Image (cartoon, rainbow, N blue to C red; front, side, top):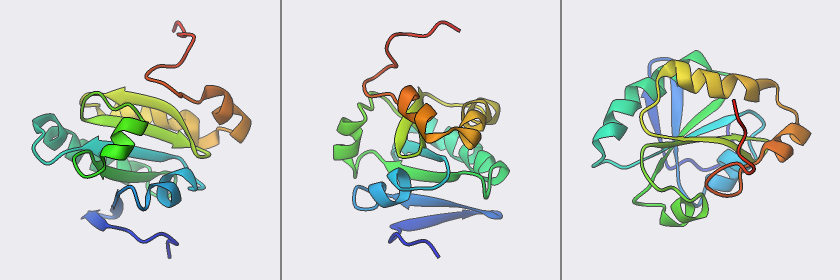
Length: 143
C-alpha cells in the first residue's frame, strides 16, 4: 500500500502509472525509494499522445524497479515553473529525491531505458553530484 494519496491511476496491462499533482509530488517523487520517471504532458498535446504508449511500455519493462508517474502540465503550473519545463512532453528522472536527468520531446523506449538504467544502482552521493538545478547540467559534459 502506497502512503501517498494518488490523484488517479492509469492501468496499462500489468503495470501501474500513477497520476500525480502538486499535492502528491513530494511524497510520490521526492521521497520515493526507487528511481522515478515523471512524464510531463497535457491532454491537448499531440506528441504527448504519441509518447503515452511508449511510456507505458517502459513502465511495464521496469515494473518493480522504478516508478512511472504522469504530471499534467496544465493543472500543475507551479511544478512546471519549478522544474523549468519549456516544452512537452518532458521526462524528468529522479533518484534519491534529486532531478538527475531530463529530456524534452518524444522518447523511444530504448532512450528511456538508457537514461533510467544507471539510476537503478545510483548512490545518494552520486545523485547529489549529478543533480540538475537549472535547465541544463553545468558545466556541460561532453559525451
